[in-house]
Image (cartoon, rainbow, N blue to C red; front, top):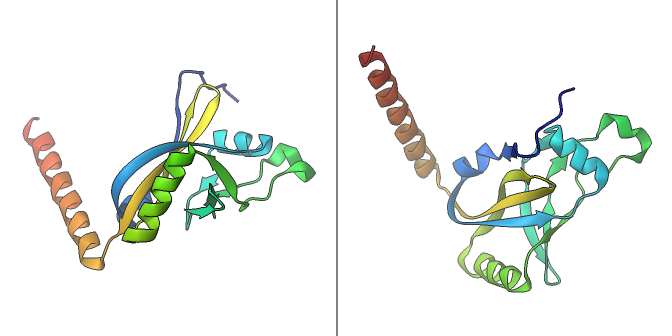
Length: 156
């Protein structure tokens, strides 16, 4: 197995979050992990389905993020769906908690980013899209793709 360069960033995106939510604000947070979780993330064994952030007792926890088992660890593996504490400043937690409570916004993970020896989670403060908003964004994306395809073929 080839080793990853230290400068090469690890990036796992939650593509569905951009489809389901209109992202208002982005913030980067550290995440508290155990060793086998780090190995599984570096192997890109992550599933964002239904993942969200919950505020409890002045702390932020990432819920329902499925980090698969790391095969070589066998019996010493982690629980795949456990709550993971997010490392944010107290004032950031308070501000995000107030926004989520008042305005009907949700805090969802957008990506997992690895920089050198750190693994961080990019969070997005999002408002749920309605069905017609989802259709509009899909139509815009298809139109943009068609225009790019036409420009590509015309330039030949």
